[in-house]
Every structure is written in C-alpha cells, then in structure tokens.
Amino acid sequence: MATGDTPATADPPESDEPTAERRAENPRLYEDEHLVAEGRLGPNELYWRDHFAWLKDAGYLLRPRYSPTWSAPWKSVDEKPWTFEESVMPLSSLVIDATRSSDGSYVVLKRCDRLDPSVVSGALREGQIFEKLFREPLASDPKNHCIRLIEILQVPDDPATDLIVMPLLTPWQSPYFQFVTIGEAVEFFSQIFEGLKFLHNHNIWHGDCKANNIMMDASPILREDPHPWDHTMTRDYSRYLPPVRTRTRHPVKYYWIDFDLSDEYDPSKGPPLVVPGYGGTRNVPEFSFPDRKCNPFAVDVWCLGFMIQVYFTEGSELDSREKMQGFEFMHGLVAAMTQEDPAKRPNMDEVVRQFSKIKAGLSPWKLRSRFTSERRAGIVQSATHWARQLYLMARRIPAIPTP
Image 1: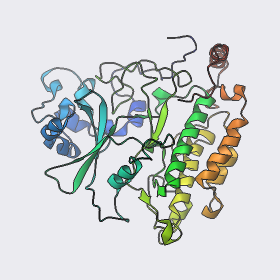
Image 2: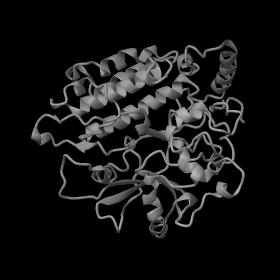
Image 3: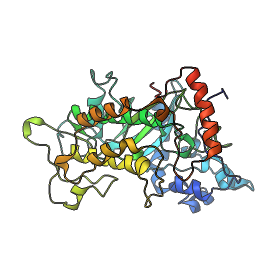
Image 4: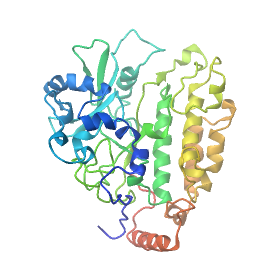
C-alpha cells in the first residue's frame, strides 16, 4: 500500500459463517436460508433461469446459479452453503447482475415495463426517462450524474417487459467503502447535488431520493472486484475483499439510479403538482396528506436533505446511524432543505449555490479532518490519520478529490 493511502475497509469477521453485521448489511442474502440449504432458486429467480439462454445469445451471461442445468455444488460435499459463491441470492426481484460477453464488463439488468410511445405521464416510465437522459446533448453533459444506459433489450416472450442494461455500480455507504476525510464527503455532496439539479433543470423529478438510490463507480479504489450482492467479499466469493484505496488519491464518481418513480414535468401545464408517489422515504411532510397534490421537486429536496441528516449531520436511532463528527457546516442547508413547508425549501439551483459558498469557506484542515462518528473518535487513530494527511499535503494531493 502506498504511503498516505489509508485502507477504507472494515475488519472482516473471524468466522466464515455470516455474522449479525453482515446479515444487517445484506438482509436478503440470508432471509431464504432454507432455499439455499436445499439448493433451490427463490421464486423471484425463476424468471432469470428461464431467460438464461436468451440472454446468453443476446450477449449477457448470468452467473452459473441461473443456468437451467445448475445444481447446488454444496449438496454433494460436506461444506456450508454460504461458503459457495453460487449460494448468493440477488437483493431485488427486478435486478440481476451479468457479464457482457463482448468485453467482459459487469452489468446489471433491470426489468421494467415495455416502452410505450403513447404513454406520456402517470405510469412507470423508466425506459422513457432513460432514453431522454441518454440522448444528446444530455448524454455527454458532465453534470449528468445518472447511471449510464447501455441498451434496452426487448424480451421476446414477455411483451410487457423490457430489460434495461446498465453498468454494475457499488453502494457508496457500505462500511467497506468508508470515507476517510470530510473532504471526500464534501465531493460526494457536490456530485449528488449537481446530479439532482441536472434532473430538475430538465424538468424531471427523481421521486425516490434515498441513500441506496445513489451508487458509485468504485473501480478507482478497488484492488479486486467485489461480489455484486455481497460487497464484503471478492467476486469469486473465496475471501473477504482486500482493503480499498482512498477516494482522496483515487477519486470516484457517484450516480443517481432507479427512475421507476421519476416523471417529466411539462411547464406549459402549470405548476408541478402530483399525488404523492411514496418512495422509500415515507416521513415526508407532504405525505401526511395523501389526497393533497404536492410539488415532486420539493419532495426530492426534502428527501435528499433528510438522507444527509441521517447519514452525516444527525444520525438516526431508528436506522442505527451514528452522527458524524465535524459536519456542523451542513446544518443550515439541511435544515432549509427539510423545512416542513415545501414553499420555504430551496430549489436545487439554490441548494447548489448555497453549498458552493459553504464549500469555499471550508479550510484545508477541516477538509482533511477524519471522517468518523463522535463515539469512534480516538487519539491514536487521529494521530495516524493526521500523519497520513500531512504526507498528502506535502505531495500536494487536493483535499477535495475531484475526478
């Protein structure tokens, strides 16, 4: 490991058996343990098994688990199922990982409603949203922080369904990919604010602004590829993922994903008012009045502010999230974004302007401060952290890691 490149992964558990922490981080990996033990696919996996051959012909190879001829390898040996890669189930019934045959790259396939040119609003329109976002000039706009569209496949035996093909990304909030400095988190804020502003400026609301709908291209910090459904493990599931590089020395890009609750606003039709869409964040003030239309752009702002509050500025007992140390500079902006009255919230143009002023006022010492919770701050860890930061300062490595 190069000097100054702090490992950003958590220590692996001593036992190979799934721990409580791994279960909490990946709850769906183990909720169907009886199916795993019996070597059977879950009900939501049968669709992928049934389309394994067609996808292979289309250029996308699913993991061996989904081959029609697959049988569980642990059934014939005296070993625990969870030591085998083929025991890992996907976290969503709608999404599966695959390898693109043409170049060996890893992708995800997501089932969505078939594109229908006659649909203009009020329906699941993820394919249409993607097609707009990835037509020029939007596709090449550097402010476009939406996950890239590779292609849309039409499922031949399922006239109601298309498969959206996208790059395989990594959760930004996984403990194995922890921020090291406040400056790394500041760059995260910059990119996600810019990405949501980009959507709003093109009259698209996201509709589900929550932590797991933001992901990152972790390739700059990875020494090995992680497993797509268990990011504590290497892709072949043979061992725990080795320590990753820091974002400070190897900047990453963040992307908004999951547009199945998104829609496009037509300014010619008056104010943007819709019935609440109820994404993953259910405590939005407007959602207390389900029969009252609300501004979906203001809902996006509230949800994003709330996510920052939970993961950075305040923590959450409900989600077992600790308050992070040193983010008092975000309190005012987060409070503005999460005001109960949507008319008083800043729009994303204003959020970006305010944040730019906040960022410009942060000292190099603040930006290089250790990213840690108040409970976990320690003298020894801080001394080691600052020794590395002084080395990076001497090397003139920027405190804010811009890709």
